Image 1: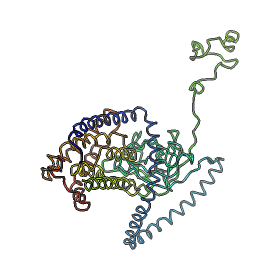
Image 2: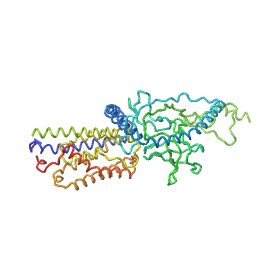
Image 3: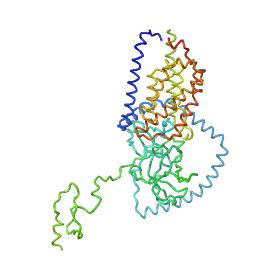
Image 4: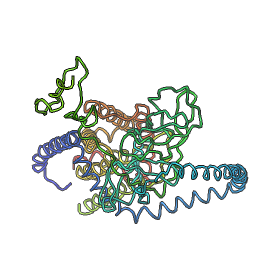
Length: 321
Length: 173
């Protein structure tokens, strides 16, 4: 404000130059983000790791207060809730009977099959610290990270069902991409028909089911579990139930209570068998064992990288005939 | 003169504090279930409202820091929204003189126009970069809500924080 006019005469072009440089730098940042995404996302995780735990002291009281207000509001509906709980209890009693019988049956069957349950399926529990803050992203931050051994891609559940997957790990925080996010896709199996489908998040509370082979075999209320086809999620984790919307679309009502996330379990999954060399899987072992005879009219083909020598077994062909 | 400098610096600090609290509130894990209309972009409304009133209070550096941090924290493409905000703010900053004579309705429409143009340009840039943009309906609802919240932000800045419109005489000073 106290500047002299000459100062301003210089200040204006300098400022314009500064703005131009800034704009170019920002464009470069966006381009670098697009080209070398993992590096920038690691940077983002580091920034979140640095900033969010500092916000905690300010956020925790307000969050707690808001939850208390929520709790008081539910006091007002105490009578209705009580009635509702009674009704549910009645239903649950019958379910409990069914569950007990099923449990016994299941134990018997597991015993018959000599199934060994995977002892490596352990989990780490974290507390939700913050959410994405943007109306277009459905994700939460939890307070466990690389120092707890969390890896990208691991499945995350609340007590009941799958919530999402880890996407972005910092030293002490990690981000969980919820199933409802626009970018979330996981392969699922629909029981009891056993059909494979993809669960596609679309920012609505009930993600859509797509790529189903025979939608007519699926009824509302069918159970949805993870199929494990992506090689990242363990198979068989409960996701939710099928619901049918008015426009005849199949959607999933999630078993997890996405609106009220507090404690999350990150399932440690272990990489399955990777097939590095497809050649080991397809066709008989090579060179053929002794006494192997090619069918008449079939010429031996050599795989790339294999010496075209006549194997021992083939040279015997004549002697065998 | 000294008084006025102090005044500006205290408003700058207030601006940064307000932005920090808006970011904090948005990050709180309370709004997990709001799936209807997306909330307004309070940061943008606050920045542009203060910029149109007293440009000196919202320096370029503050905009850069606040929006870049928001980009990183809110899982947006880093730098893209910051870029658009800086371009819009520079465009609006250049005409405080004309704006001071404008009635409020015109100022409001300038803000709304800026928001809509920014969202359209953002979608175009995302499309060029082969990034899936958010659903169009949600983006538009977001823009409309942001434009609708603007008078409220202006009212709060005016009556709660005493941020008055800069007079034509002061622009030249």
